[in-house]
Image 1: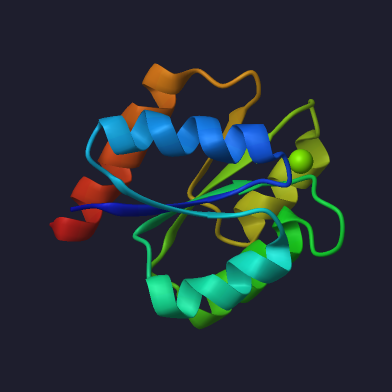
Image 2: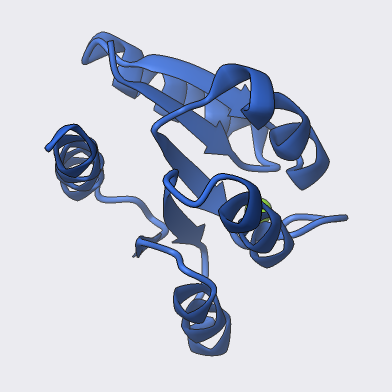
Length: 122
Ligand SMILES: [Mg+2]
């Protein structure tokens, strides 16, 4: 079963994405802070991480930086609420594999997650 991690400080988004992807037979792990995400990732080893940029404490950029250093193979899709193009640019430079803006287009998101996992298998 493909495994993803959803990282977002908004509990509702974690819950919503969890049920959306679980219905589509993904295994889903959630984290509501950057710190929690970095703690969990070592044990959980998801193939794809959906990573909110704006979070208190360690934000998505901080998490991305650490994550790509430790686990370069993990695919990371940045999730951002507002038009923060400088942050997105920074994320791409740090190795983010794609980004999606809120409100989320779930069809697009699912397609992208699938695409990332397929590329890992190949
Ligand atoms: Mg947020």
